[in-house]
Length: 475
Image (cartoon, rainbow, N blue to C red; front, side, top):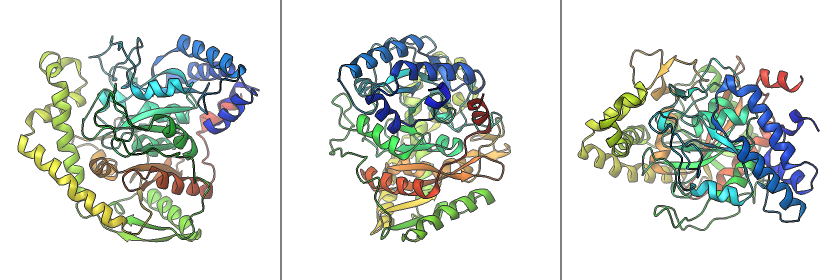
């Protein structure tokens, strides 16, 4: 089997083929390392490629599988981690010059669990510096580029995590989401990104942006892959006092269920200001769901726009608290945009922070009321396709594209409420760029969100891959 053929299998297919010994973890890992060498100098999805670590893990997985020691669907599967997750003895930079030489003494719990499941670590993925931005235009490690158009951003902050999935340089990845940093890259690059319920996945060993808003979750090719990854990483962690003890279910159960008889609501506050392409794609997704017997109406979460503002205030304060010492001693070592938003944190008052935190309960109550007897809520993933690199800003009012309004306003509010939200591609624009929809659920109802997403994924069918990827696979 050729390397290009090996790269086309999702985690579900890889798990079956690896277990049956139809393919080898070693040849699969070599295929991914070759692909990284082929394309990553252009896309810059990786900060560190762990060639030796990956090859050693692949040989171990091959030996274990041959001996009948099967660990599950990730056994022998090459994955990569956002470079916020601690990896013992492996460079962990946070995408910053500040941590340019930092090698942790222990692993993040998420990587511990994936490693125990037999996953092979390909490397650490590029991101917006310290996860504080939505472009992944990193001044220290290079700008991550969108696989559909390398002149455009992949979204952020988990830009490398999404770009690697779409460019076929990892079979599955991990991202983090504080204001939209899993879902925005998934939306702009054309893959699946799940922000779990806050506290569902341990954040132990993850460099924080905002302690009370950070979420860690999967970025994958398919909904089923995201469910399988959740089966590995979800659950209480004694090292993380904020991790929930809520029972973890098998997230892959029910993914083949039909949608007929379900009720869903379109979030009114997120259903305007869309480009023509985004409007057409979202409306087509809604029409496809209705064709399956789903009842869909419009609902309102009145304080959702204010929840986005609260998200910003909380992040300003909590990010500065973490970075305070470095900001006093090494401000020149931050990129200009990250340093500027950290400076906003210096100006955030205690009263503003407390009011923002208190407002969260109101928005969650409104979101629960909107759900009512509905199964999930729906919203566009983004108002626009990926902007060109340098075209947009979250802090410059003179910028051509206001990324707060066009990107963050669709995602920030649900970090504030802590609800599970999945971003799924809805198709390509007329210019061939990805568009996306969000599926929003009740707290700890990831299974329902995944069920709806899997059914929609079947209705939608495959999304055409990036042109350059298609060309590379025919060479």
